[in-house]
Amino acid sequence: MRSRLLFLLVLAVAASASHAAEHTAMTTTAVNVRAGPDRAFPTVTWLLSGTSVTVVGCIANWRWCDVIAGKDRGWVYTRYLAYPFEGSKVTIVRGGPKLGLPAIEFSLGPYWDEHYRDRIWFARKAYWQTRWDRRPPQRGIGGMGSDGAR
Image 1 (cartoon, one colour):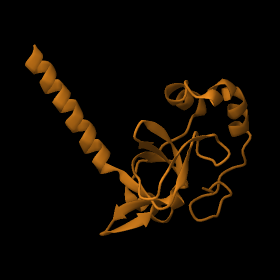
Image 2: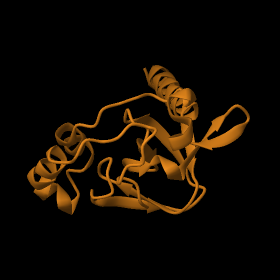
Image 3: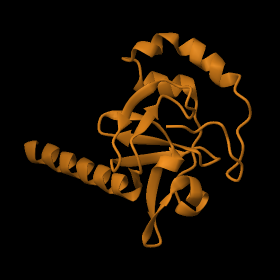
Image 4: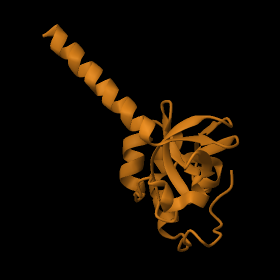
């Protein structure tokens, strides 16, 4: 029984490590990690330049990616994330869909319920949901949006 549990634990760690290695990016400057894909969202944490993060996926306009850094999870503007591509590092905002990162959707309610219940600003989830629902349409990858500052 003990050896079986140890085997399952090793297998889980190996699977997790291989998945994380698939989509590892690096911050290009000190950057805020936000609670959603817009600079208006609360700051979850901040990361130093050169910090490795696991990219879970990016929203369709390739401006923001959902990342994991240590025990924290949140959204980083892709101008500040470099990803290996064809022998060099490319910012995700420039590489976009060519990089092969997963495209994902952001749904505030379920995302916050899963990741931020212990945060002080979680109590105002309805306010943030209304604010998110009223945002102007996002531009595609070619247009400059107002969504990205550190």
